[in-house]
Length: 381
Ligand SMILES: [Zn+2]
Image 1 (tube, rainbow, N blue to C red):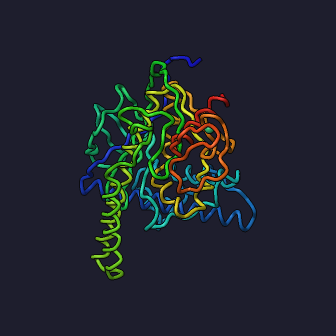
Image 2: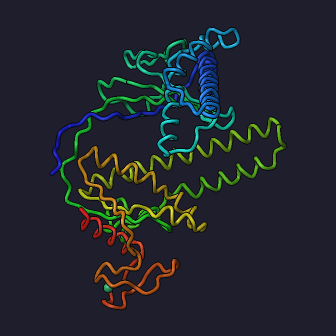
């Protein structure tokens, strides 16, 4: 069985912060330099690749960076911390590693408008003292909103500063944390990715699902979505290049960011409860790809944020000593009667409830599917 030892894990904690005008300017300059270095190194690598079929190493890129700083037109690169620039080269290196391993497309240039503004600082480029975080070449500690505490005695190893399209600043602090597994739980549960509901459990869990096992989409989603649609319509009406258009764009980004934040919070609470209550959790290896072909479902699936749920379940199960079984073989989960194993002949998507012709069991379509996922998961262990 699982061993119940505390285990160290790397964990990122993200907080909002409010830079002083001086810090904002320094960080904006750093973001600009990070993008420039990334793009320039990408250009050099692409040229070497196209002209000579040669791969440029991280070490060579790093030497180029040193040379660039010595030139007159790029001397300003020396005004920001060198660590985020080095980290940009490392990110480029892994982008190429992924490309050569056929895991990813060819790396793309970071655009001024579309790419995320961020800078990554490793241990040598920040100080962490008495709960205050100060970045190299940045005046004074950051004014961080500690919405939740860092783990006691945490030692940050990497700090990433970013600004989103809505103009909000955040800092993500990577720490070594100690996770203690929870006491073993009695429950086992199967999950069905939701279409009408966010997801469905094979058995109801009080406080988490309704009486049959359905977990509803968060109530605020509908209102948030209406707000987003309004903001998008307002943006579409604004004249191109006008300052009102720029304002409307920030407004859209803000609504977007809010939806993403709230949904993530919701999914965190949900997955933590599922992991807490159950020793074995069975999920299907989606099928997202298949479902995506159906445009009507695509929206529901992305809304349901199934992939996020799966990722959260994966690491939380590992942290807390639970078993996540991913059923990766295809089986007719919605057509299969979970009571007797008979496969129904037809099952149109619109059918929410059905009665098994063989045994007479009455099924809710999604609960039945979740039960089948659980049975398949338990069989596969
Ligand atoms: Zn049956």
